[in-house]
Length: 123
Image (cartoon, rainbow, N blue to C red; front, side, top):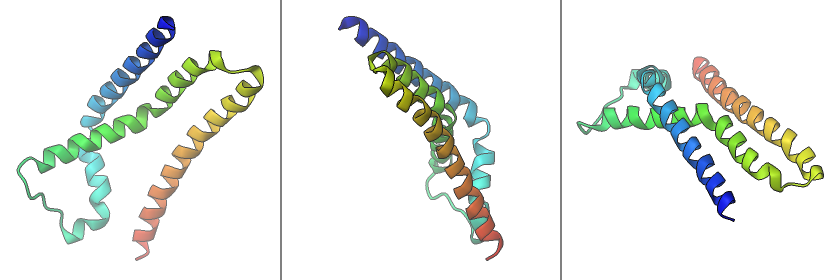
């Protein structure tokens, strides 16, 4: 039992540090990401009402972007932890499901983002 908890702890710690590193790296592009996100409403004006709001907005945006970037790594680390406990028939179902779910998630995000941009272009 202790070995499983140690392995779970290593999975959670590596996932946390991967997300933290990705969030730190995304901080350098957070201004560009924020500009990309507020582009549709830029004509109406974007105002920050508190002195620290612009910083916290960029910090939250970099954290979400970091999680978005590192999500497949986290999913596959958790899958690697769960894999020894699965039967062969369950592995045959779960493995393609994990790959397809990840691919469909990113496809859906891209579709929603591009659909929003195209909708704003024709309004």
